[in-house]
Image (cartoon, rainbow, N blue to C red; front, side):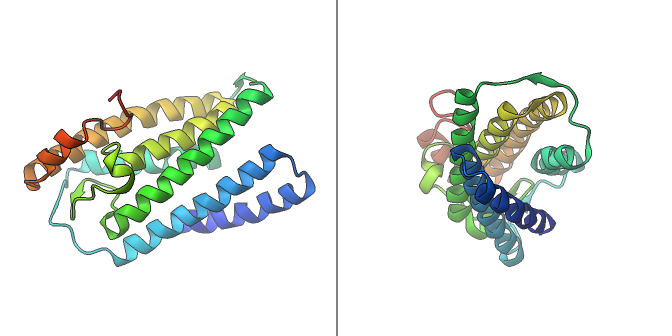
Length: 206
């Protein structure tokens, strides 16, 4: 909820920038901010309305991994020094990165909508969702988060954020492994879903 409030505050600033300097990159950033605020709103409602899970992975290390993967980049962006700029990308690449970021937010919105009150930060088992983007990969929400992060970092390739993205990628892989182990143990239909949707994160790759 705090993140949603911060995002709405940033949205007002982005709106003023879009009005003052209406380039397509600025407008794309404003659109991303609107979509991300909507995404956070869905998550807040899901957390408030969700029921208790049938099973959960209560290991402190796994819970810490999930929370860190979700919020590390936000914390680094807000509190940590950005560090040196490693690479200044040309406008064409910055434009492509903006498209990737907006695409990531759209994917996150779609995945959050399909999950509904099944959303959780740590590995938990509730109802198995196999519709929407979950027909393409088993973890579209994590793919969306990585697309958003990579798109933002390409535009502002500072050392702190680059390291942060690399750490988040590793943490997401650990998170996926723990989540799938829990679901395989507790959901008899999950094995069928795995055979039908073979890729965890990246279509046709992994």
